[in-house]
Image (cartoon, rainbow, N blue to C red; front, side, top):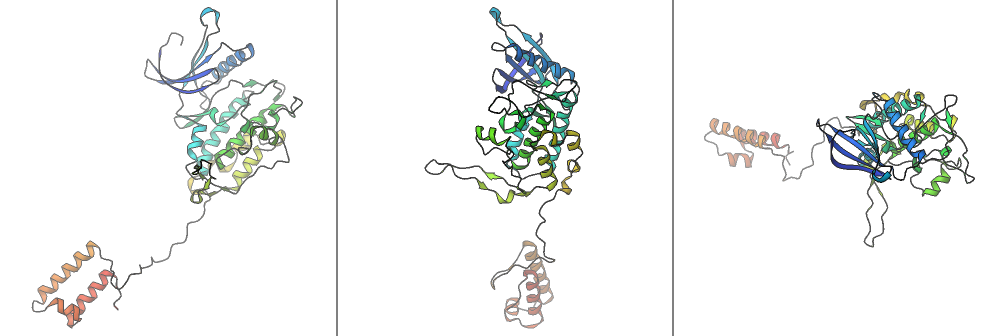
Length: 383
């Protein structure tokens, strides 16, 4: 790329005409290289790629935006359009994978608050630059050295200076996170213009998934989602408890089995978190929360000790003694050592006494001392 050599290690992602590789530079630095084939690219799409590069350069140095290291457009042989290559800093994991891995754990509100705050900060950066992303989804965020960063501005578009909304002729979005105004009606028109509130809706869907394990419309088919998302009569569920499920197994006949709820991983969802999701998933764009409002939520600074969780069962003041049978005893090596030491002391003090007979007959001072000490060690009540 621009005469700099990178060693290609692994392909870490692909989609459409693009491939993303993990590479090693001559200075032993790891980067991500995005290589886009331009052979089937029209002028509008090419302009979108150039806007992406321009945006990344404009936001260089912001800790919530992925850093662009280098870029190059290289023509192909025989007049073909060739490739666009972007060299960017490498993320350890994207948010989609992070959410998938988190399904193995119960709801952790501190974890949610940590990444939700960073997600808001990242999108706020592009909104301040008068940019609407319009296709936000978990895969658009990666973790770089523990910090969440926004990537992939392929379809981002600048907003005119005199308005906070844009009307886009076409929209490529992920249905699970698509806002009501981003979905066209049957007549081919939109109910509302697509603007900043559209990104807020998408963020709300991601927050819903962070809490409940799946986006709000995940149970519906694609066309059902397209109808339900803008439909005010369709009620979004906001359970008071977040549950986790065991991966479904197929039955003996090959039929899928129902998900099994893991009760021990069920956690209550704080009302303030549910309220935040609702403020993002208001079907009226103007009624939705703004990012500055969302960043002021107190629960974003929640610490582990402040998370509301079910109280543990009360402990008894004194631990109950185990119920033992007449022929059972609690004897540890320490107790046995003490018992033997005491018996040796008694033997030296009373050399003329048969200890077996004295103990079994409970006869005399020595027998009573042995019996009392033995019962004290073994915690047995004599019968």
